Image (cartoon, rainbow, N blue to C red; front, top):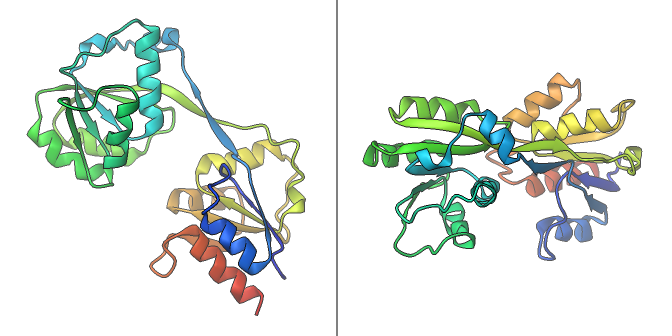
Length: 246
């Protein structure tokens, strides 16, 4: 079977994307459509979680979404975030994104390499802060486990939710392959297309949690990334497509 069309469950990338290069090289149609989107909670819902932003001296940011929704809620609650606030960010890219909301210079900003576990030395360095973790309704159990092991005072605040997008305008059977990056993407497929049967449709997934969600949904996974050989999704797709098109 030749792959002629792929639906990637993410927003359309920039012009320099490897997806677009692959589409041109392999002569296939690639469409992009987010299967999920983020909706912020309001300040009333934050209060039901018994969260008072004034009580925290440190914030742990794991994503740009978390930053945007923390400062949105602070503004809604008329809370002026003090210059003394300590920011612990999962990566340098997330730390740099803080510049959208604060004057970066002279602030207490620290960041890890990439993985959440990389933050442990920072928690040991600044153990006395009272930390807030702004998060979505879906939180990695590893993050909670690592925070619990760090011996710090921390509280989770759900500030936004990942929800299924409306995809009912799509004819899902127009595509030879579907590409997923999160368990929520698999959930959105099932929620939007109640009668979906995989049959000849190929499924590609990124990450072990997405793989587990696909298998639980009784889907057969044809392409898995990342692996040692194919660390990116585009590399995994290209390798698979070439094997089919021999």
